[in-house]
Image 1 (spheres, rainbow, N blue to C red):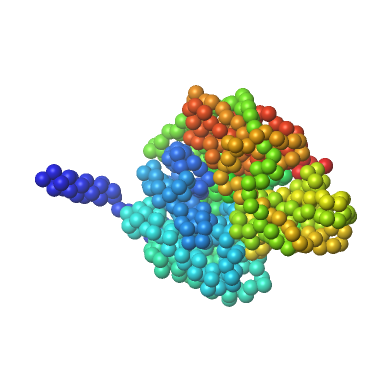
Image 2: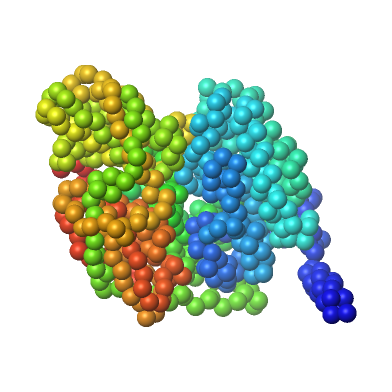
Length: 621
């Protein structure tokens, strides 16, 4: 009897929930976005689930709603979910994209989904899993069966997570993007015919439909690249187009003479690289452009409305004529209206004044912020002794990260010389940053940013050469994305001779916080070092680690890699979300690569430092 009553209760509960949740309709019709039969203007903001602690998702959605927005756009990061070939994770940490989308719906926001498969986004490898490079015959972003099989598997896995969240099934997802800025890639890869490019983009678009996505589709490109990037059956939108007349003209040309008109990426800020100035966009200019769109009936998506943080090894990289790599900062603050820590800025307030209505909610309270005057570091362990527990891989030549089946972090390359050799060391295949040692003494710092690939070296009889290489993030934009192997990818040359035979490689992926429980302090200045300490808190809160006195490395807090630091700036602090701290004892581990001096403590402060540029600190002394 009790079992029957319980079943009846569950039945009525399900019926009540179904009735209580109104099912919406959304379509692109007669030149308009039409929601529940009424024409609407989309006021969206881009915000990425992977860059914000799960515990803060709701707060950030509330910030968006209070700014006057009605939608959120997000990329989906393929490599964040396929963690190893065929291994999918949509649950741990910040990976629960279904929960993210449901939370947006609960806060009254519609969702624009951008699944890629390529996303750019200043994200490691543009969203691609690093191990795709190991698949025989595969060319990423190309019309080949190996790649298209991988994208189909990805879309299938993603659809299984979000199918019930499509607007056609009662969810908040109103639009899905077909590929991403593909017109740019066509322009960058002129070695591939436009016909072949279009076969690829059409195949990927068809895959989205085949796996079950049945909502409105769109593409986004620069307005001058629609011919290459637009897809039949998808609304073309123009990224970064501030000229309304031009926007309408080009959309009309590729969309049957009508709208709706949308700027899918409206930039209120801009991306940031290490060793380069932090770009700023004024609140006045953003407000002025917003008003222009509002007056013209143009829909828009702020990229980014809230950037967040490239935690761990998730940041990508660009390149230009002067630099073979321009690694992106850990902070993805982006000079966005909502700051990295979720604070309302002057820009936020200016936009809110334009968008708010009588129904716009109040701005949520800022999360608690604390400072920690001193965190004592009680252990300093040399990386050399730590790697002593790792079994090396031996080969005739240095192997790449990929050949070592390693995606991220560091590799310790070493070779013992039975005969002396001296002259010019050439490391033209360095990807990306290396410190060179002979018998434990630092010889040079080499890196791809400064195109610094050589130094003078003197290796005496019976000496050991060590090259510790860091992967600083794979290229996420441009033609060179297809050349994204890391480590030492070409021969090591000394005095004109290729150095072969008996290379030992120690993988140091740093995918987990190093366990120093049994280690003893033995570090020396000039040697890469692991520092450990604990600190106690009576009250949790967001804070910013002050790394101005440090060189280069990464930081773990309570087991979580919160990202890279580098003395070149402009970022000199690391954001620590209060939700990852504990009342009571907390643990910190810092891997300091340069370690020019021994450290005994680190502190935190209440405000970030993102504009303190010291590029000279990136050059070898």
